Amino acid sequence: MLYDISDFAAKKMGRRKSKRKAPTKRKAIEPLDQQFNCPFCNHEKSCDVKMDKGRNTARITCRYNLEVDPKK
Image (tube, rainbow, N blue to C red):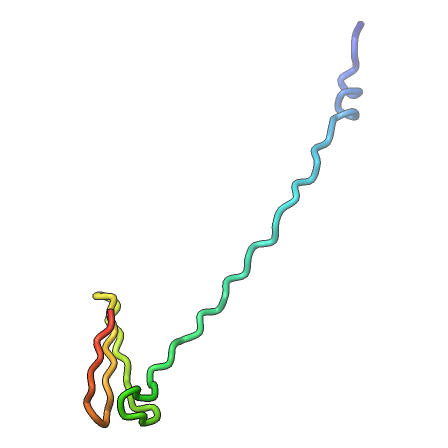
């Protein structure tokens, strides 16, 4: 029993299509405010924030009453 090669090429089994999920969208990172209302003297936009990314700390200072609040 001899087979013709062209018969096998025509009857090739196909694969199912793979179902891929759409890539997830990254949420946009909103920048944090650099000035806040002072919790001690209640002045508006009087507290400045200094970020130290190397030490992973922040320092909050008030311009009016010179209050300092170091945060970790």
